Amino acid sequence: MRGLLARLGDPHLDTPVVHVAGTNGKGSVTALVASVLQAAGYRTGRFISPYLERFNERIAINGREISDEQLVRVAAQARAVLEDWSPTEPPVEFDFITALGFLHFASEQADIAVIEVGIGGRYDSTNVIETPLACGITRIGLDHQAILGETIPEIAGEKAGIIKRGRPVVYLAEPAEARQVLAVAAAAAGAPSMVVGESIRAQRIAATAGGQEVLVSLPNGSHHLHLPLIGDHQISNLGVAVGIINFLREQGWEISEAALERGVAATRWPGRLEVVAGEPTFLLDGAHNEDGLVALAGALERWFTGRIGPAVVSQMGDKPAAPLAVALRGRVGSVIATAAPIPRARRATELAASLQEAGLEAEAVDDWREALGQAIVLAKPGEMVLATGSLYLVGAVRGWLREQGRFAGRASDAPQNG
Image (cartoon, rainbow, N blue to C red; front, top):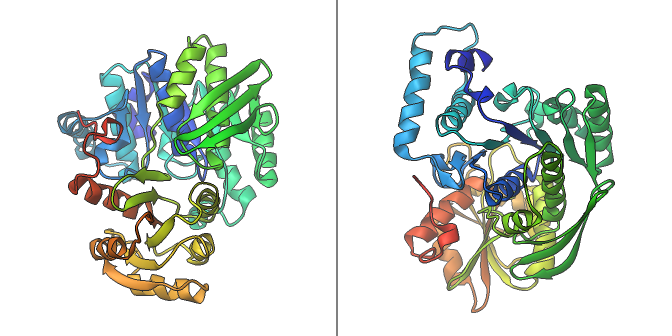
Protein backbone atom coordinates (compact mmCIF):
# COMPACT_ATOMS: atom_id res chain seq x y z
CA MET A 1 0.00 0.00 0.00
CA ARG A 2 2.82 2.40 0.86
CA GLY A 3 4.55 1.47 -2.39
CA LEU A 4 1.41 2.19 -4.39
CA LEU A 5 0.88 5.57 -2.72
CA ALA A 6 4.55 6.52 -3.14
CA ARG A 7 4.25 5.96 -6.88
CA LEU A 8 1.11 8.14 -6.88
CA GLY A 9 2.90 11.01 -5.14
CA ASP A 10 1.82 10.16 -1.56
CA PRO A 11 -1.64 11.74 -1.79
CA HIS A 12 -2.47 10.49 1.73
CA LEU A 13 -0.04 13.09 3.10
CA ASP A 14 -1.90 16.01 1.50
CA THR A 15 -5.05 15.93 3.64
CA PRO A 16 -5.34 15.96 7.45
CA VAL A 17 -7.21 12.85 8.59
CA VAL A 18 -9.46 11.55 11.35
CA HIS A 19 -9.23 7.74 11.46
CA VAL A 20 -12.10 5.54 12.75
CA ALA A 21 -12.09 1.80 13.51
CA GLY A 22 -14.35 -0.63 15.36
CA THR A 23 -16.54 -3.67 14.84
CA ASN A 24 -19.87 -1.84 14.91
CA GLY A 25 -20.51 1.89 14.75
CA LYS A 26 -17.44 3.09 12.87
CA GLY A 27 -19.55 4.15 9.90
CA SER A 28 -21.93 6.09 12.14
CA VAL A 29 -19.04 7.89 13.85
CA THR A 30 -17.48 8.67 10.46
CA ALA A 31 -20.78 10.14 9.28
CA LEU A 32 -21.26 12.17 12.49
CA VAL A 33 -17.76 13.66 12.52
CA ALA A 34 -17.86 14.46 8.79
CA SER A 35 -21.26 16.15 9.15
CA VAL A 36 -20.05 18.33 12.04
CA LEU A 37 -16.89 19.35 10.17
CA GLN A 38 -18.95 20.24 7.11
CA ALA A 39 -21.30 22.31 9.30
CA ALA A 40 -18.23 24.11 10.65
CA GLY A 41 -17.38 25.21 7.11
CA TYR A 42 -14.62 22.76 6.26
CA ARG A 43 -14.40 21.02 2.91
CA THR A 44 -14.71 17.53 4.34
CA GLY A 45 -13.85 14.23 2.70
CA ARG A 46 -15.47 10.99 3.84
CA PHE A 47 -14.30 7.47 3.01
CA ILE A 48 -16.57 4.56 3.99
CA SER A 49 -16.76 0.79 3.53
CA PRO A 50 -18.83 -0.90 2.27
CA TYR A 51 -21.32 1.00 0.12
CA LEU A 52 -25.06 0.36 -0.01
CA GLU A 53 -26.21 1.05 -3.56
CA ARG A 54 -23.39 2.65 -5.57
CA PHE A 55 -19.62 2.28 -5.45
CA ASN A 56 -19.35 6.10 -5.55
CA GLU A 57 -20.75 6.28 -2.00
CA ARG A 58 -17.35 5.15 -0.69
CA ILE A 59 -15.71 8.49 -1.52
CA ALA A 60 -17.43 11.83 -0.94
CA ILE A 61 -16.68 15.47 -0.20
CA ASN A 62 -19.25 17.49 1.75
CA GLY A 63 -21.73 14.66 1.26
CA ARG A 64 -21.39 14.70 -2.52
CA GLU A 65 -20.23 11.38 -3.90
CA ILE A 66 -17.34 11.20 -6.31
CA SER A 67 -18.74 11.52 -9.84
CA ASP A 68 -18.28 8.81 -12.44
CA GLU A 69 -15.94 11.12 -14.37
CA GLN A 70 -13.82 11.86 -11.28
CA LEU A 71 -13.74 8.18 -10.41
CA VAL A 72 -12.54 7.24 -13.90
CA ARG A 73 -9.83 9.91 -13.70
CA VAL A 74 -8.30 8.78 -10.40
CA ALA A 75 -8.71 5.10 -11.32
CA ALA A 76 -6.75 5.74 -14.52
CA GLN A 77 -3.95 7.30 -12.46
CA ALA A 78 -3.76 4.31 -10.18
CA ARG A 79 -4.07 1.80 -13.01
CA ALA A 80 -1.15 3.40 -14.87
CA VAL A 81 1.03 2.82 -11.82
CA LEU A 82 -0.06 -0.81 -11.53
CA GLU A 83 0.68 -1.48 -15.19
CA ASP A 84 4.29 -0.30 -14.81
CA TRP A 85 4.99 -1.92 -11.43
CA SER A 86 5.60 -5.54 -10.51
CA PRO A 87 5.86 -5.71 -6.71
CA THR A 88 6.50 -8.98 -4.90
CA GLU A 89 3.22 -8.46 -3.05
CA PRO A 90 0.75 -6.74 -5.42
CA PRO A 91 -1.90 -4.36 -4.03
CA VAL A 92 -5.29 -5.94 -3.43
CA GLU A 93 -8.65 -4.46 -4.44
CA PHE A 94 -9.17 -2.52 -1.20
CA ASP A 95 -5.66 -1.05 -1.46
CA PHE A 96 -6.64 0.28 -4.89
CA ILE A 97 -9.97 1.66 -3.64
CA THR A 98 -8.33 3.37 -0.66
CA ALA A 99 -5.76 4.96 -2.94
CA LEU A 100 -8.60 6.36 -5.08
CA GLY A 101 -10.03 8.03 -1.99
CA PHE A 102 -6.74 9.69 -1.08
CA LEU A 103 -6.23 10.81 -4.69
CA HIS A 104 -9.69 12.36 -4.84
CA PHE A 105 -9.34 14.23 -1.55
CA ALA A 106 -5.94 15.57 -2.60
CA SER A 107 -6.99 16.60 -6.11
CA GLU A 108 -10.16 18.29 -4.82
CA GLN A 109 -8.22 20.01 -2.01
CA ALA A 110 -10.28 18.76 0.90
CA ASP A 111 -9.51 20.56 4.16
CA ILE A 112 -9.84 17.36 6.16
CA ALA A 113 -10.99 13.76 5.63
CA VAL A 114 -12.69 11.27 7.92
CA ILE A 115 -11.51 7.77 7.00
CA GLU A 116 -13.30 4.58 8.04
CA VAL A 117 -11.21 1.45 8.40
CA GLY A 118 -12.17 -1.47 6.17
CA ILE A 119 -11.39 -4.51 8.36
CA GLY A 120 -9.41 -4.57 11.58
CA GLY A 121 -6.93 -1.73 11.77
CA ARG A 122 -3.31 -2.80 12.11
CA TYR A 123 -3.01 -4.22 8.59
CA ASP A 124 -5.89 -2.36 6.98
CA SER A 125 -5.16 -0.47 3.77
CA THR A 126 -6.14 2.80 5.46
CA ASN A 127 -3.48 2.40 8.15
CA VAL A 128 -0.86 4.19 6.09
CA ILE A 129 -2.14 7.22 8.02
CA GLU A 130 0.81 7.87 10.33
CA THR A 131 -0.17 11.14 12.02
CA PRO A 132 -3.97 11.31 12.28
CA LEU A 133 -5.46 14.38 13.91
CA ALA A 134 -7.41 11.97 16.12
CA CYS A 135 -8.55 8.35 16.13
CA GLY A 136 -11.86 6.85 17.21
CA ILE A 137 -12.45 3.20 18.07
CA THR A 138 -16.07 2.15 18.43
CA ARG A 139 -17.55 -0.95 20.06
CA ILE A 140 -15.53 -4.12 19.53
CA GLY A 141 -17.24 -7.47 19.12
CA LEU A 142 -16.80 -10.81 17.40
CA ASP A 143 -16.65 -10.47 13.62
CA HIS A 144 -14.20 -11.51 10.90
CA GLN A 145 -12.62 -13.93 13.37
CA ALA A 146 -10.82 -15.83 10.62
CA ILE A 147 -8.84 -12.65 9.91
CA LEU A 148 -8.72 -10.77 13.22
CA GLY A 149 -8.69 -13.47 15.91
CA GLU A 150 -11.14 -15.58 17.86
CA THR A 151 -11.39 -13.47 21.04
CA ILE A 152 -12.33 -9.89 21.94
CA PRO A 153 -8.78 -9.07 23.19
CA GLU A 154 -7.26 -10.39 19.94
CA ILE A 155 -9.66 -8.35 17.83
CA ALA A 156 -9.14 -5.28 20.04
CA GLY A 157 -5.40 -5.63 19.47
CA GLU A 158 -5.95 -5.42 15.72
CA LYS A 159 -8.22 -2.37 16.06
CA ALA A 160 -5.65 -0.74 18.36
CA GLY A 161 -3.23 -0.79 15.44
CA ILE A 162 -4.58 2.58 14.29
CA ILE A 163 -3.40 4.27 17.51
CA LYS A 164 -0.32 6.35 16.68
CA ARG A 165 2.40 7.84 18.85
CA GLY A 166 1.22 11.00 20.56
CA ARG A 167 -2.00 11.21 18.57
CA PRO A 168 -5.28 11.42 20.56
CA VAL A 169 -7.76 8.54 20.61
CA VAL A 170 -11.34 8.06 21.82
CA TYR A 171 -12.69 4.60 22.67
CA LEU A 172 -15.36 2.86 24.75
CA ALA A 173 -15.23 1.55 28.30
CA GLU A 174 -17.16 -1.54 27.22
CA PRO A 175 -16.55 -4.38 26.75
CA ALA A 176 -14.01 -4.39 29.57
CA GLU A 177 -11.59 -6.84 27.89
CA ALA A 178 -11.40 -4.58 24.83
CA ARG A 179 -10.99 -1.45 26.96
CA GLN A 180 -8.00 -3.00 28.73
CA VAL A 181 -6.22 -3.77 25.46
CA LEU A 182 -6.91 -0.29 24.06
CA ALA A 183 -5.76 1.41 27.26
CA VAL A 184 -2.44 -0.46 27.18
CA ALA A 185 -1.94 0.38 23.49
CA ALA A 186 -2.73 4.07 24.04
CA ALA A 187 -0.38 4.28 27.01
CA ALA A 188 2.41 2.58 25.06
CA ALA A 189 1.97 5.11 22.26
CA GLY A 190 1.72 8.09 24.61
CA ALA A 191 -1.63 8.83 23.01
CA PRO A 192 -3.95 11.22 24.89
CA SER A 193 -7.19 9.31 25.52
CA MET A 194 -10.84 9.90 26.29
CA VAL A 195 -13.09 6.99 27.19
CA VAL A 196 -16.83 6.94 26.56
CA GLY A 197 -18.40 5.72 29.76
CA GLU A 198 -15.69 7.34 31.89
CA SER A 199 -14.27 10.75 30.89
CA ILE A 200 -17.10 11.10 28.36
CA ARG A 201 -20.67 10.45 29.52
CA ALA A 202 -23.49 10.20 26.99
CA GLN A 203 -27.08 9.67 28.07
CA ARG A 204 -30.44 9.84 26.36
CA ILE A 205 -32.76 12.54 27.69
CA ALA A 206 -35.69 11.66 25.45
CA ALA A 207 -36.55 9.32 22.59
CA THR A 208 -38.82 10.33 19.73
CA ALA A 209 -39.79 8.91 16.37
CA GLY A 210 -37.37 11.39 14.81
CA GLY A 211 -34.39 10.37 16.91
CA GLN A 212 -32.98 11.00 20.36
CA GLU A 213 -32.15 13.95 22.59
CA VAL A 214 -28.74 13.21 24.10
CA LEU A 215 -26.62 14.93 26.75
CA VAL A 216 -22.90 14.40 26.18
CA SER A 217 -20.72 15.48 29.12
CA LEU A 218 -16.95 15.94 28.92
CA PRO A 219 -14.54 17.31 31.55
CA ASN A 220 -14.64 20.72 29.82
CA GLY A 221 -18.41 21.01 29.39
CA SER A 222 -21.68 19.44 28.25
CA HIS A 223 -23.54 19.36 24.96
CA HIS A 224 -27.30 18.88 24.48
CA LEU A 225 -27.68 17.39 21.00
CA HIS A 226 -30.46 16.12 18.76
CA LEU A 227 -29.32 12.81 17.30
CA PRO A 228 -31.45 11.71 14.31
CA LEU A 229 -30.04 8.16 14.47
CA ILE A 230 -32.07 5.78 16.62
CA GLY A 231 -30.85 2.92 18.79
CA ASP A 232 -29.09 2.75 22.15
CA HIS A 233 -25.80 1.98 20.40
CA GLN A 234 -25.88 5.34 18.62
CA ILE A 235 -25.58 7.13 21.97
CA SER A 236 -22.09 5.73 22.57
CA ASN A 237 -21.22 6.37 18.91
CA LEU A 238 -22.16 10.02 19.45
CA GLY A 239 -19.91 10.05 22.51
CA VAL A 240 -16.97 8.92 20.38
CA ALA A 241 -17.74 11.54 17.73
CA VAL A 242 -18.00 14.38 20.26
CA GLY A 243 -14.74 13.25 21.86
CA ILE A 244 -13.04 13.44 18.46
CA ILE A 245 -14.46 16.92 17.85
CA ASN A 246 -13.18 17.97 21.27
CA PHE A 247 -9.65 16.84 20.37
CA LEU A 248 -9.86 18.71 17.05
CA ARG A 249 -10.90 21.88 18.88
CA GLU A 250 -7.87 21.53 21.16
CA GLN A 251 -5.68 21.46 18.02
CA GLY A 252 -7.11 24.74 16.76
CA TRP A 253 -9.87 23.57 14.45
CA GLU A 254 -12.69 26.11 14.73
CA ILE A 255 -15.88 24.16 15.45
CA SER A 256 -18.53 26.23 17.20
CA GLU A 257 -21.23 24.84 19.44
CA ALA A 258 -23.78 25.78 16.79
CA ALA A 259 -21.81 23.82 14.16
CA LEU A 260 -21.68 20.81 16.49
CA GLU A 261 -25.43 20.94 17.03
CA ARG A 262 -26.23 21.47 13.33
CA GLY A 263 -23.82 18.80 12.17
CA VAL A 264 -25.12 16.12 14.52
CA ALA A 265 -28.74 16.97 13.71
CA ALA A 266 -28.02 16.81 9.96
CA THR A 267 -26.29 13.41 10.05
CA ARG A 268 -27.70 10.76 7.76
CA TRP A 269 -26.53 7.16 7.81
CA PRO A 270 -28.76 5.12 5.46
CA GLY A 271 -29.52 1.47 5.94
CA ARG A 272 -29.11 1.51 9.72
CA LEU A 273 -32.52 1.47 11.42
CA GLU A 274 -33.74 3.55 8.50
CA VAL A 275 -37.50 4.04 8.14
CA VAL A 276 -38.84 4.39 4.59
CA ALA A 277 -42.45 5.56 4.72
CA GLY A 278 -45.05 4.02 2.44
CA GLU A 279 -47.72 1.35 2.24
CA PRO A 280 -46.30 -0.61 3.86
CA THR A 281 -43.50 1.27 5.62
CA PHE A 282 -40.09 -0.43 5.51
CA LEU A 283 -37.49 -0.62 8.28
CA LEU A 284 -34.01 -1.25 6.90
CA ASP A 285 -31.11 -2.34 9.09
CA GLY A 286 -27.83 -3.84 7.98
CA ALA A 287 -27.14 -5.69 11.25
CA HIS A 288 -25.00 -8.68 10.29
CA ASN A 289 -23.03 -9.71 13.38
CA GLU A 290 -23.97 -10.57 16.96
CA ASP A 291 -23.48 -7.08 18.44
CA GLY A 292 -25.35 -5.46 15.57
CA LEU A 293 -28.24 -7.89 15.97
CA VAL A 294 -28.40 -7.25 19.72
CA ALA A 295 -28.66 -3.54 18.93
CA LEU A 296 -31.42 -4.26 16.40
CA ALA A 297 -33.36 -6.31 18.97
CA GLY A 298 -33.14 -3.47 21.48
CA ALA A 299 -34.35 -0.94 18.93
CA LEU A 300 -37.26 -3.15 17.91
CA GLU A 301 -38.37 -3.28 21.52
CA ARG A 302 -37.92 0.43 22.27
CA TRP A 303 -39.17 2.04 19.05
CA PHE A 304 -41.11 -0.60 17.12
CA THR A 305 -42.85 -2.91 19.60
CA GLY A 306 -45.76 -4.64 17.90
CA ARG A 307 -45.23 -2.70 14.67
CA ILE A 308 -43.09 -5.16 12.69
CA GLY A 309 -44.90 -7.66 10.50
CA PRO A 310 -42.94 -9.73 7.96
CA ALA A 311 -39.15 -9.75 8.06
CA VAL A 312 -37.07 -10.42 4.94
CA VAL A 313 -33.60 -11.64 5.91
CA SER A 314 -30.36 -12.64 4.25
CA GLN A 315 -26.90 -13.53 5.53
CA MET A 316 -23.41 -14.12 4.18
CA GLY A 317 -22.22 -17.71 4.24
CA ASP A 318 -19.72 -17.11 7.07
CA LYS A 319 -22.26 -15.71 9.56
CA PRO A 320 -24.01 -17.84 12.20
CA ALA A 321 -27.81 -17.82 12.01
CA ALA A 322 -28.46 -18.17 15.75
CA PRO A 323 -27.91 -14.46 16.65
CA LEU A 324 -30.31 -13.47 13.88
CA ALA A 325 -32.92 -15.90 15.16
CA VAL A 326 -32.52 -14.60 18.73
CA ALA A 327 -32.88 -10.97 17.59
CA LEU A 328 -36.09 -11.62 15.64
CA ARG A 329 -37.84 -14.19 17.83
CA GLY A 330 -40.97 -12.66 19.37
CA ARG A 331 -40.30 -9.26 17.78
CA VAL A 332 -41.49 -9.81 14.19
CA GLY A 333 -44.27 -11.61 12.40
CA SER A 334 -43.42 -14.11 9.66
CA VAL A 335 -39.81 -14.51 8.49
CA ILE A 336 -38.80 -14.92 4.86
CA ALA A 337 -35.23 -16.10 4.22
CA THR A 338 -33.75 -15.03 0.91
CA ALA A 339 -30.37 -14.46 -0.76
CA ALA A 340 -28.87 -11.01 -1.26
CA PRO A 341 -27.63 -10.44 -4.84
CA ILE A 342 -24.00 -11.33 -4.10
CA PRO A 343 -22.16 -14.67 -4.55
CA ARG A 344 -21.17 -14.85 -0.86
CA ALA A 345 -24.81 -14.85 0.29
CA ARG A 346 -26.11 -18.04 1.89
CA ARG A 347 -28.74 -19.83 -0.15
CA ALA A 348 -32.28 -19.11 1.01
CA THR A 349 -33.06 -22.75 1.76
CA GLU A 350 -29.90 -23.12 3.85
CA LEU A 351 -30.62 -19.94 5.80
CA ALA A 352 -34.22 -20.96 6.44
CA ALA A 353 -33.07 -24.37 7.70
CA SER A 354 -30.45 -22.76 9.98
CA LEU A 355 -33.01 -20.35 11.42
CA GLN A 356 -35.42 -23.19 12.06
CA GLU A 357 -32.65 -25.15 13.84
CA ALA A 358 -32.18 -22.04 16.02
CA GLY A 359 -35.87 -22.04 16.90
CA LEU A 360 -37.23 -19.45 14.46
CA GLU A 361 -39.86 -20.43 11.89
CA ALA A 362 -38.86 -19.23 8.42
CA GLU A 363 -39.70 -19.97 4.83
CA ALA A 364 -37.32 -19.72 1.90
CA VAL A 365 -37.81 -17.53 -1.19
CA ASP A 366 -34.75 -17.62 -3.45
CA ASP A 367 -35.23 -14.33 -5.30
CA TRP A 368 -35.03 -11.33 -2.97
CA ARG A 369 -37.47 -9.33 -5.12
CA GLU A 370 -40.06 -12.09 -4.82
CA ALA A 371 -39.42 -12.18 -1.09
CA LEU A 372 -40.13 -8.44 -0.85
CA GLY A 373 -43.30 -8.82 -2.89
CA GLN A 374 -44.50 -11.63 -0.64
CA ALA A 375 -43.72 -9.58 2.48
CA ILE A 376 -45.74 -6.64 1.14
CA VAL A 377 -48.73 -8.93 0.58
CA LEU A 378 -48.39 -10.42 4.06
CA ALA A 379 -48.07 -7.08 5.87
CA LYS A 380 -51.25 -6.10 7.69
CA PRO A 381 -52.46 -2.47 7.76
CA GLY A 382 -50.13 -0.44 9.99
CA GLU A 383 -47.39 -3.09 10.02
CA MET A 384 -43.83 -2.43 8.85
CA VAL A 385 -41.70 -4.76 6.74
CA LEU A 386 -38.21 -5.33 8.15
CA ALA A 387 -35.22 -6.09 5.89
CA THR A 388 -32.08 -7.10 7.77
CA GLY A 389 -29.18 -9.52 8.20
CA SER A 390 -26.94 -8.10 5.49
CA LEU A 391 -25.92 -4.66 4.22
CA TYR A 392 -25.94 -6.17 0.74
CA LEU A 393 -29.62 -7.03 1.11
CA VAL A 394 -30.41 -3.60 2.55
CA GLY A 395 -28.60 -1.89 -0.33
CA ALA A 396 -30.55 -3.94 -2.87
CA VAL A 397 -33.84 -3.19 -1.10
CA ARG A 398 -33.04 0.55 -1.01
CA GLY A 399 -32.43 0.50 -4.75
CA TRP A 400 -35.66 -1.40 -5.34
CA LEU A 401 -37.62 1.06 -3.17
CA ARG A 402 -36.08 3.93 -5.09
CA GLU A 403 -37.19 2.33 -8.36
CA GLN A 404 -40.68 2.13 -6.87
CA GLY A 405 -40.63 5.88 -6.19
CA ARG A 406 -40.44 5.53 -2.40
CA PHE A 407 -37.70 8.14 -2.07
CA ALA A 408 -39.29 10.77 -4.33
CA GLY A 409 -39.09 14.25 -2.87
CA ARG A 410 -36.90 13.24 0.06
CA ALA A 411 -33.74 15.27 -0.46
CA SER A 412 -31.88 13.67 2.43
CA ASP A 413 -32.18 10.26 0.80
CA ALA A 414 -31.59 11.27 -2.80
CA PRO A 415 -28.32 10.10 -4.38
CA GLN A 416 -25.62 12.78 -4.35
CA ASN A 417 -23.52 11.58 -7.28
CA GLY A 418 -21.40 14.35 -8.80
